[in-house]
Length: 199
Image (cartoon, rainbow, N blue to C red; front, side, top):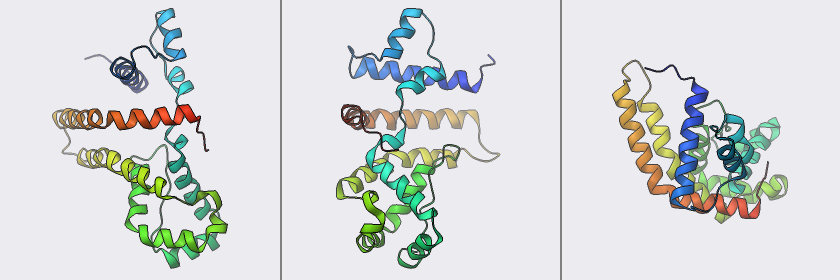
């Protein structure tokens, strides 16, 4: 068995996904980083991949949700009013916490009616962070997409987890990803065309 580091595995996996996307969806479209990498005859590194990747927060609706969560945490007055009117904290996305985006969106949908009313009552305070119907629609799709990943993480936890179980979960998640690939492609094309960068 080879002794590959975690960064090498992530870079390899990301490279495969990038190649699959460029081959399956747009054969003629290759990013500047990929072209440079191919010309130099070397594998993409983690820093190469990060140059073109703006993250999930570059999606306007997710950016609004993130900003709302930060706004709630920025003042005890805000959070007290939220607790009184909504009754469930959103939490906040975190790069080091598994499925944090899923949990924030999940909490959002648990109290959707109360949150919509809260946003109407405090429209001036919230400002541009108010979620519109198009934002709710995109967040619903993101919730559906992320749910299997959150479930797989929980399923693979604990001392009973095995390699065969992990491989099965990876196959299931890959199948789920393939089914959702068209929607993801449209979403990221929309982001790149409109050069959205909300955070």
